[in-house]
Image (cartoon, rainbow, N blue to C red):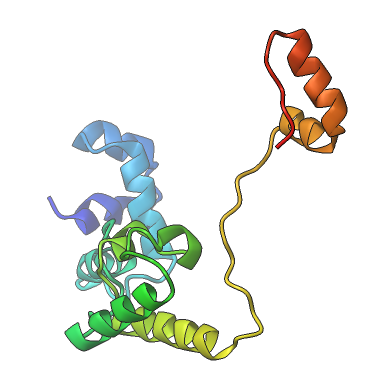
Length: 169
């Protein structure tokens, strides 16, 4: 039975969706979703309604790891990799954190626009000598911060108290 044939009594005669669900075996929530799509104007006519719903659903979703545009050319990927190596990275995976690459991009898969944007960004950084390269810094714990501000003599005395040998550098 087509979807419209299931929903027609609801729209034309006011039959509750719960009753239609009980008679047809289709879940009430599914019927509510179909009716909502029809009311929202996704369907322009009854005959084309469900084709347009299926098409819009396919277009609205993008599978994990898929690109949302045409792929980058081999030349763009090679140029991007060369610029990353000049910046001190060994490859795409190594540059994932500092460059903000996604998992897909860390695997070397870029859209044409993404590759162009990253190439421009690296070229701008190359010519901007005043901007220092950002090195990733590890967060220090509270204990490490306290030790950093402790005077050397006090630290050496505590180490000796615990059995260590502390000498001047």
